[in-house]
Image (cartoon, rainbow, N blue to C red):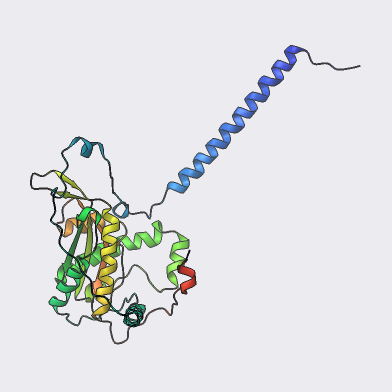
Length: 290
């Protein structure tokens, strides 16, 4: 007996197929949302370390521009010109100097002249910045009691980071470097330099002044600072105190427009200092010539 589908039966089947497909699509979308939500949950991300540059905010568009003066005087510029032979030598010498730079966690309490610190900070202050806003503040801590308070805050948060926030993969990755939440160098280093990015400036009339690309600008200044420290024979270890920014800012009485970007303990290495036996990527792995 031949079986034929009536128009009514066909319509019912089509409706059922539609419901099934719609449910499947909804289920897939729900699962994808769960995956995306899970991917977005990153408890180790520090709010202070997020780039807060907003080039076009509604408030700024409505306000009178508060930048540099309209007519900045321009002056002649000249740079020292070297022979090709000297250029090659200088570039090689500078590379060899900075190639000796290492992250050192064993820092002596031997005093360092304050004038040296003044000069390396001035050197960092030569960094370029968006619209020449110079959005950086370098806080130098040498008081022993203050250094210890900073250490207490950082170690308290770092223990939580290692045990709960960072995750097994990150903890295992840094384990080979023999690092943990104990930071003795925060007490022993003669100086701690805390570098804050100014997410915006404050004008005399208390209005906000836009600091374009503030995080990139301050990051470049930090790189120059590391080179300046290497140049004078001092060591440091770059530290981003995860989830400590607000507490350290309040401790140091810094304004709300400043966010902690980096902390550097500064000093001479101890006589028994050690560092991991690491190698750097070869030139072919980091440079592409087109």
